[in-house]
Image 1 (cartoon, rainbow, N blue to C red):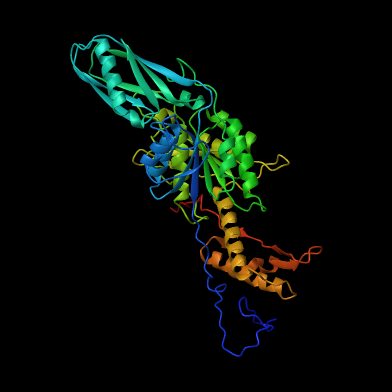
Image 2: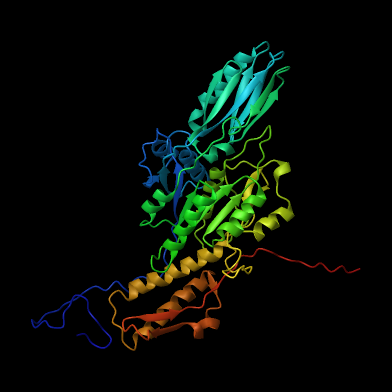
Length: 484
């Protein structure tokens, strides 16, 4: 037994020998809020050259690590590279996925016409630029061979392999599946008179088919504590698996909140239906950068966009600070004809899609980072969890309160005084959060903070914590009154 106001963990009340006994109590030492570290895991296809064990997460510190575990030019390699380029300090893991028994996408570049003037040819594969010098009089076979050689010179950072036969360069996606159909090829001919190129896009000669499943990776990462998961596969089936995973792992019993991300470059209406109707998930977010396969421009790939978007979000440790205008380093700007109009951006934001836009310096930036949640279970429009910052804030408030409770009540007894002690600690945490402008109006909601013993479980205290989250300043509306 201890005294009414002092209890001991290591000094028993039953000792008889005279002496001086002291123990150290560290449960009151920490009053600050916990750190908001962000651990990110990428689920992405590897190639046979990648040494990573399928579906088993491994820490990634550098692009060389991504190549080692994912294989050169694999989706795993390029997605990790995009994340590291966007946020070099990211805490990153990769869960490499084996290709299914699928088909890799292929495309061709066909050269026609002997060069009648010297110049060069620019080719973009994804967002990688390749320059091929051409001499006056070069034959089509020579030009095709030069294109193949130039591509192979930087093959370590390309999502395709290259081969040549007479006048035709064949590009083959390194990974099987549908993502290979989204690898754009663009070109520009500089002063090479009488020579033309005909590009048949990757996926148009042979369509990539049969995506693998992320189910094995989700099973293996389930016990881990990742805050953000990137799904490079953006089909409805795999995203549905991720949605189920997020709901399960973030629930009150598993108690490991997590959010999921993917990127998209295709048709806006298709994405809006996928996000706002099919997924409708408050813990998922999709970044949209519209591309069409045009000449004279590089294009970032779907999974590169997803990785850069998530990495930039992970760089912001304040859960309530909005992400408006945050730039995605390394992501190619879309062409003028593909830039979303105001109406198109509003449509995205009404249907669970995070639009990107071109800002100064030809960079892509976040318009407003939102979730794919649009309607409640009754099918009624519900903006409660529109912004990602809302779920980030709620998750952080939860972490702060539970961390304090773990520190203050590690082996506590439950007496009539205990609920009020718990309530006092909650109020202290909420006021600290208010100081940091993560929540607000704590005093207005004090009466709503209730801690009481459970009616049926003698060992349980129930707590109700009204939380007014701080919102982002999204809109400033001005009225200018003219005075003559």
